[in-house]
Image (cartoon, rainbow, N blue to C red; front, side, top):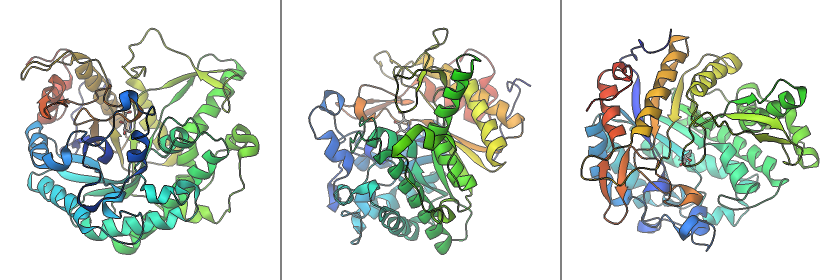
Length: 456
Ligand code: IFM
């Protein structure tokens, strides 16, 4: 079975994804409080070209036409995130109804357009007021997050199809507290495991809050998984690969599904590895209704003591194409990851909650924005998803990252992931060739993936 003759089920959801800080703009409008990303991007030198999310795609004001755009593309689902500090400007306590109203309007419009809303509660934009109280380093954050989640559930559960607690906890902890490339920009090996653990505790508390309020099977988590392959069969490279996998992938999935950390972590973190109360895992492993997998690339690893704490390094695969973010294009990795999740943690509902690529898009002219590399990327990854489904993986939907070109964190606006081009000077949206291709794929339930050429 190649997957090429695979028709996706009628019920399969065809989506695109975004996140609040990356597209909304107007971060302080209508009583919202600042987030750590507002603060970080307004600190000179931390984001490329000192870009920030003050305007972004102006989606906070253009949401209506953006929903129409999604309907024109043929999307049946849309994944977005809720800005915590719009809803609770201080992070806890007082609810800002005007902030909630934005998401009420958005979800109503989505449903009217026949598009199912998939909401993520945390996509990296912690209220700055909570960072001032220690943020993800403070154990109280689990309760703060659960209280915020309950406010969102109460207001939106009758409109939202499904809820993800966190987006990519590994990136939050690694980028925000170890490499420092992302907000809040700390660089501290001792902080990273504490932050990961508090993220997991917050996730568990938010799942429990959902169970207390709703009987719908509609809550899960989104992780980015990067399959790790050894560069050679020598024992050092095999061990280096296991460490890299434990650090990036199993650090989050093992606690959530198995109630414990992978055995490699104490070795990786050494003295920085704390003793966690075993009772914390009761909430962390609260049963989930689905898992969201974000897949972009793989890692081929070899041992190298110079790279701490992992003592492993990625080997560039020169035979394959790379995206503008220097990520190897490796579609089979998506099929591998989906099969690996099923084998390791059980056969439950999965979504590909993000998959996409930043490529250099030639300047767009009128309606003909052409992005053949992204068309090819989409085609090959959807085919790989089809192969995993043909092998029995319970994949329920796919979300392209991203609907719109947007604020790519520390890269600012220099990397374009959208299937729709955004002219940041005018806010004009132009669907790219990849959006037109996606429309055809959606309309044919995947049959249009088969020819290697997309005829317009
Ligand atoms: O833009 C990000 C997104 O916020 C989280 N996942 C990866 C994307 C591309 O880097």
